[in-house]
Amino acid sequence: MGKLTGGSRRHPAYPVFFPVAAAYGAIALPVSVLALHGMAPLPPLATPWGHAQELLFGFGLLVAAGFLLSRERPAVLALLLGFWLLARTATLVAPAGPVAALAGSGFALLVAAVAAPRFLSAAKKLRNQTFAPILIAISLAATAFHAAGASLGIPARYAAVHAGVLLFAVLMLFMAGRIIAPAAAGAARQAGHHLEARVQPRLEAALLLLMAIALVAMLIPGARVAGGTALVLAGAVAAVRLARWRLWWSRHRPDLLCLGAGYAWLAVGLLLWGASALLGVPGRGEAVHAITVGAMGTLTVSVMARIWLVKAGADPAAAPEPVIGTLLLAGAAALRLLQPGSEPALLAAAALWALAYLVLLGLFLRVPHGRRRAARASGEARRRAPGRP
Image (cartoon, rainbow, N blue to C red):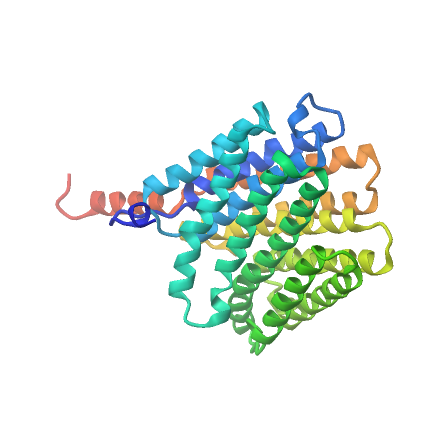
């Protein structure tokens, strides 16, 4: 990877990856839901694993790449985006073909190959290196998903999808915690309080361990009780960690409350999934939607909006878009949990999801990203300089 990552001109991925991901989330994912239920003429997306592939390894991994690749050569970013676009196109044309499998796996593996070494070399503490193995595991899950489609069959694809959901849950537990903790401490200080519980490394380590147990238990026949217990405990630990951030001290920071809502959806999803496994009753589908629609939807909208606004020099707390998106996605997630078999509820949830990402696209259009804003400010300063005509 030396040729790919060398050189002096480096740029963040978010100015391109975030708008592309938001547009894809607003259009393609709701359409895949409609196709899955026979309401759109797109057979390649009219399967549960086709819909899950686009949500996790198409949309979710592109957002993660935009967040993690903060400084990279344009050629590498173009290569990543090219693999991503080829995978999306090939999925529509020939979803079971080699091009879709190679492009989808290639995108996932390339994201891990570019980003993981950075975290391994830059992080001084062992727990801060967790990004790397999580990314590698997600890329392997994507590769296993495509391999299952080529030769291993439907049960293996479901296993890869469920492993992908849990791995993205781990990534969100880790990433969101690292964003919320310092922001909550700063907001508490502004409100005249002192927040002692910040990253909470012991609870974070417990979450990582419990999620690892749950993932391993998925692969072992007869380990349903162990996996369910681990997920219930992980959901409880996540809820305790969230409560210790005391976000009610941050009532003046709606952007932090939106991040907290996404983290709460994670806790709900893990608890539901674990309870379903422990009791041997239906409910895993509702748990998956709590994690994907509720947590992934809310956190991706909130994090993308926050990074965009901060890089542009704007105040994240003053922007209405994250709040609107959070409310829309809360409605979508609630509909998927409370009325899972209702076609009107499905259509309403898909519409609310699409609206949330259209609102986010509106933010990207309304606020110039950091580089353009800095160039504009520099130009205005030169024009105002004494002696200039």
